[in-house]
Image 1: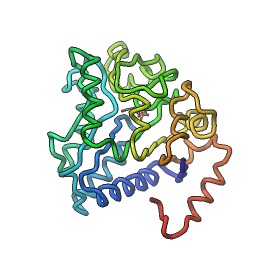
Image 2: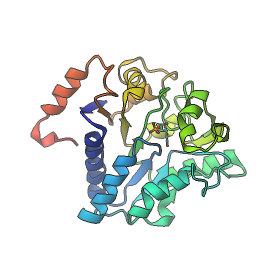
Image 3: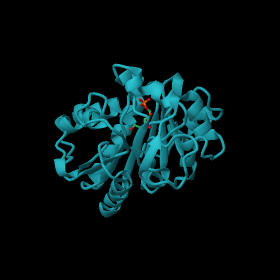
Image 4: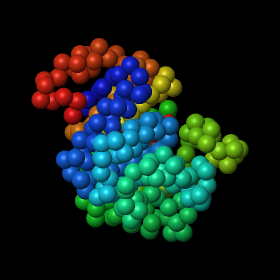
Length: 261
Ligand code: F6R
């Protein structure tokens, strides 16, 4: 696990954008795993700019989103379909038939989840998975206690996550209880994981994920077992890390050939 601490979320997002761009330039038909929420918004803006200014090409890219609320129409303002459209897909030249977001209206949820998982497998697996971190340590919508080897399935949100996400809904009671989410096993199968976390509100979950024991009680901690996981933090999110000075020294003193890749 490589921990990269930058002063601001903007600077950390710039590193993330460079890493994604590097991936796409090395493999134009990359499979990306995508997250929603406030954390990756800047990253998506930067990638959209790289597309329009530097011609970063998404035409052969395939995407799989981590999660979606059950029961929300894709057109609902708080749906992750809508989020991805507005924040990313309409701004890059991605091919519509290569976009995959769990269908919150699927009738047979278990069969749908199996098919979603198979879709990832058939696409060759996820090359690079972008992740945010819940304030309770969740990855995707794998809440504390999730099986460490789980695959795409239905999950029930904790009240904490429902409260955290209520800002996207007009009425708190509207926040769905159920979601479809890739599992922790699905995420761990990705060839590379980029976890982004910003702000004081994430500091505790970051410290437990990076320096605490690996436990299902903190799903983010499972990334300690991933062989290519990078954790990109702003100073506030890193504020409870005991080895912050060491991570910063390592990042600033990388051999030139390693750069920030
Ligand atoms: C969203 C997702 C969630 C979020 C997490 C953080 O697709 O998978 O794990 O990344 O809840 O949300 P924000 O970024 O809004 O703090």
